[in-house]
Length: 244
Image 1 (tube, helix red, strand yellow):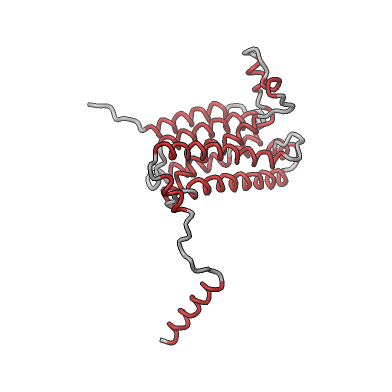
Image 2 (cartoon, rainbow, N blue to C red; image 1 turned 90 degrees about the vertical axis):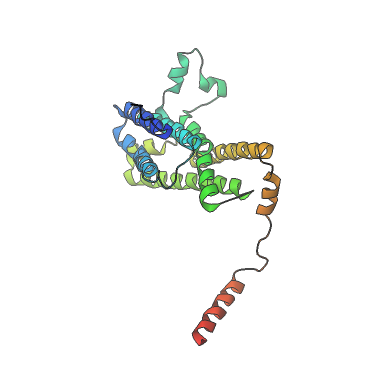
C-alpha cells in the first residue's frame, strides 16, 4: 500500500504549529503574549477554513509562514526585548554597532517583513478575485498593505489605551519614539514596494503582453462622467419604470 502524500501547505501548517508551540512556552510577558497572538489565532484558522474556496500558491503560503514565524519570536519576548544582540554576540559581532542602531529594531524588521512577505499573497488575491491587470495589479496590493499597516497601528494604539500601564506600553513597543507608528507604516510600505517591483520585473522579462496590459489598464473605459450624470440617469430610469 502506497503512502498518502502530505500536501505542501499541510507540511507548512504542521511546522508552524510546532514552531508556535515552541515559542509559546514560558513567554516573557504572558498578558502581552496573549494580546500579540489574537491576530494569528484568527488568521491561521481563516486560512484553513477558506482553503477549499481559495487555495493560495505554495509561494504565498511559504511567505505567510515566514512572517508568522517572525511574529511568534516577537510575541515570545515582546518585540522591544528580542535579544538578537545576544544571538549575534555569540557569532562575534553586533548588529546594532554595524548599522548604528540605538534601539531594539526587531519590530522594524517585522514591519518591513509584513510588506515584503505579505504583498505577494495580497497581489494573488487581487489578481484572482478582482481580476486586476497591468498597473492596478501592482498598485492595489501596495495600497492594501499600506492600509492594513495603518489599521494595525490604530488597533495597537486602541489596545494600548484600553489596557494601559506597562502592558499597554509593551504591546505598543514604541520604545519612546514619537514617530514609531509612522516609521512602522513606512517600512511596511517599503517592503511591499520591493515585492511588487520584483514581480513587475519578472513580468517585464517573461510576460510578452506586459506592456499591452499596462497600457490597457490605464486606458479610460467609459468616457461618460459619473456623479450627478449617473444619478440623473438612474433617476430617469427609475421614473420611467414607474410611469410604465
